[in-house]
Image (cartoon, rainbow, N blue to C red; front, side, top):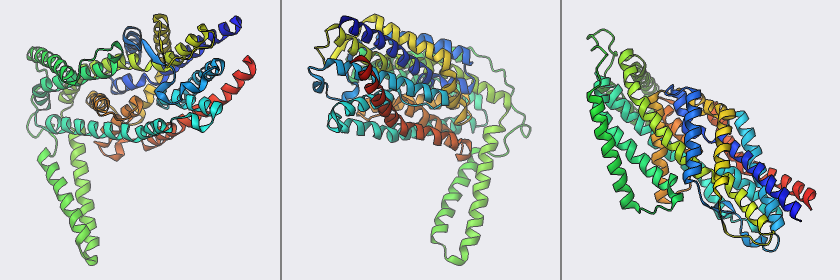
Length: 480
């Protein structure tokens, strides 16, 4: 019997490491995909930076107490007196989630690692005690996150990027406008990222600051960072010459774009109320105005003074790297539990001789280190595949666009954490990138890639469940 438990513990370590490898290969693109896609970081530097931060987050502030059954999907009480089935089921769940993450990473699909392990646990729970073993209301909230996460982050990122376009790129002097707004943007960035760290990255340390205290700390950090940015910007030299009037200036100004947008709305109203004999002429006029508006916006985005445009983007490189770094740290501290939670539960039950199944189990430091190493190795070996999808295949990113997506996603995480909304970090980031793309028009988005990603989200839970059922019965046949 002792040799059997030794085998189970060994398999738990191997499967848990495999699952952590899958998290690194797939989920870490949430933090670094936009930075690579925008050119703020090379792939090599992104991998090194993310590996350090993900491991640090997992090891230093990872969950020291992990739920044995993720998200309360299955009731632990049903396994009372049958610890062996519980251990084999959790082994099957780890292996199933790892296999699905490897397949998704190979295809370049950014899927949720949390949903992968939840789907796998649903599978072995159903195979053990039928449909009644599952808390379907919890599964329902996960399904709801497929809609809430990308929609909310997409909307927020859309408006952040539109704000940058309006108040920086659509002005006569984009670089000067960027420098004026930079301290306020720095304050917002540090404010949001500090809240993200408190609510998502540091919650495992049981630092219950409370919302008022958390907001006060975030405001203080944001203010200090903003004052530092003012000092840094004041020392920067303008290396971009003022464009000569009529030379390389855009052919339209922002007022023209706004006027065309208003004209479109008026014509759309006329279109809905005009008599049938006028419809053809109204439709043709509306199409011409839409085309003029589209061309005017494009002239601003792509025909601004090139040197000045690049200087503005350079300012945002630092903000994007900072936001990506903090998201990576928070991700490592939070999502490592998807691998070490089940692994810790299996080891705890095995060491108790298969007779004790606790609702929560303590996590040894060596398991946190193992999970952190697994994440880093997964990122270094296969992470580039999903980074390519997030950073380059949904829409073309620049530092300003990547910054908008990162901050939109972080803001969504903060709001959802406080409002109790079910979200997925993966879905949130994809939605944010999509929102930034749509801010430039539907033609700026690769809808084929978006379709494949959405289908992979829908398939994740059923795929994890099906694989877990197969592995559960296989392990049961081998071990008993």
